[in-house]
Image (cartoon, rainbow, N blue to C red):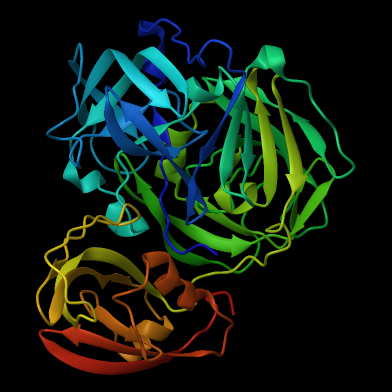
Length: 445
């Protein structure tokens, strides 16, 4: 399921040569460590401590230097050392961004510490991905962490295991497949084959991009016969450093990774302008994103340029589309008064998975902050548009269930159910409750 899109393809290759190779190290006598993560919308979120401040980072194999979004909770507390102002360019159709380049910082991930980590801090509030994914994201980290360890990602059990390369021995299994990695500009590429619909396997060089929640992106290329031949529709693909990215969505017959044939995956063909900025490596034909990567428990071994894949419980999940035609975001919070079963004194607590929640308990009631979910886009000719739903509508009930206790992922999961299913909405528009019903329909039908 692809319940929200967050596309974080960043281009910082121009600045990499300015920094020496910093290293993450485990404590003396420790050879491995296990780090728990959250899997939300097909992307991995891990705890990272930056200069003593606990933050939440997206683990993104498609990025080189770490990026910190310094407009969230880090704004008042994060120490940005040895800062220098620069301009950066990323994915999207907007202008260059101002950022700070910072060096000699201390990053801690689990027990692994790097006391000489460089990163980029960006301040534009338009880059706040939290509404689209449902929880705050303070930053992104990729290559600098992967290069120093053998990293096992277990999507089933939601943990990352890091090991010192000198202590690791590759253990093959009956269902495992080892693929060669090609590291270009500190990004991992893998050779795959796609059958776009002509019963012909076309070789493609794909960036392994765990920061992209989609299954597969392909760049149209007439010379190599990488062309959209199936029925498709125009859609919002995600958000990059320089704005929104649009393109066409469809399905292809299959993608082959080693011995694994993945049938009927969804595919996106981003628009030409976005593709131009993504081609920092000329041999690249697209990206392999989280919707496919999560179907395997994997071992990344950058030191030996290899990747081991083992199918997991997600492997046979069907690929699906949003069949409602609406895109929803977490647009804020509302204070809700609830009858309190307990008669205690004032209490406060924090929900780390979403936002800070303050609960004040009075003799008979308590007041909680609950999420507000708002439609931020209605796609043309979609079931939602035909039913009369509008941008700005606040969804308060879906199928007679209140949305205030749902995560964003839970709510948008309704939009990926089978074609023909009916969804009933209660929305607030201009302060008035209104009711709507839509019948889900695939945009490819």
